[in-house]
Image (cartoon, rainbow, N blue to C red; front, side, top):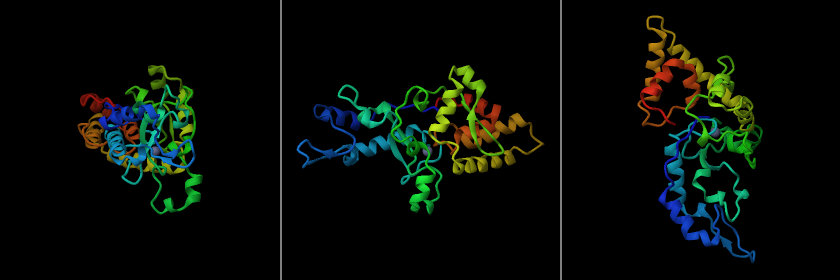
Amino acid sequence: MKNVRKSPEPEELKNYREQYSSQFRRWTGRKSKNGKKKEKGLTSDSKTFNAIRDTLFADQKGLCAYCEMKLRENNRSVEHFIPRNQSTKENNYDLDWQNMLAICLPPGGMKDDDLENPQLLKDLPCCGKKKDGFIPDGRLLNPLNLPTLRLFKFSSLTGEIRPDEKACEDSCIPIENVQFTIDTLELNVQRLKDQRLVVIDFINKELDDEMIDINDLEEKVAVEYFGDGTDNWPRFFTTLRWVLGAGAEKHLTNISYSG
Ligand SMILES: [Zn+2]
């Protein structure tokens, strides 16, 4: 998980909310009071729905807000950080732009063939599928409220994600909350660990050149992967950032990285 900087809400969502505010319009359709007529929800308004999905995708530069796998056209969903069923008349979390994130759905990193297997989907959930229904209580980190600091570190033996104690201390975020977030979103599901490990091994091979000073080499590889920050980020941004160490930090500072 990395920090996400959101752009202003799409005009379409604003208009939609204003248009239907008197009706307490929701995200998904439901039966009206007499139980017969089906009310239409926002997902049936393709223009607004697409504007939301596209803006989230652009803000997150193509990555799932939780696991940092690449979002694809057929592998993304709009996540409500506070579940939609917590909405009240005063706080309509359903249509609150600041409550929306793009995440992978089905779970990131699943092979296309595996997506056909409902048992695997059930056994290997992560991200929104794992969090499903959880009401954030302050322990679960929200990508919108994270510092630009790298709060996580990794195992180069297993691909496991762990809290970075020093960064937690520097940013005054309790280590327990970072660990709680990892556990709640199941970010150490085997599939994600395996794919992180592939990335870690690959980068370490690129860094295995004794002819070049390691700091220069780390920065050179960071330039290669992160570019000038205008394109989409590579998958497992935070893992790459950790492997590339000081070189990554130097480059991210140079490009004024903010999310
Ligand atoms: Zn994900």
